Length: 134
Image (cartoon, rainbow, N blue to C red; front, top):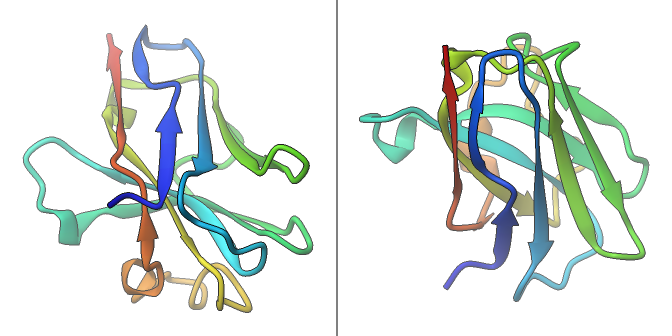
């Protein structure tokens, strides 16, 4: 059973924007980190790559190099909702985007190269598809 629920995916042309939302369905923690992974078509789940993350307490953010300057992660604590604003979308951003969270992380990414990132997150949504056409 998915602990988180994503919404906001869809199809856009290159250069366009989308905003993804993530809300907890059965997830009740208010500590740790949450954020976004993406999985490209044909890739197995083990190859999901980290996109952006936010530390719930402080709001500190982390971004993959590929999305810096284009994507912005934010959260509304009152609504218990997290957002990913995606601007200047490119065909290479086409993927299924997954919201993920873990309440026990003191920081959202394990070092500068993000090795072992996927294994840190134990709560997941079912994903929302983003298609960017050229």
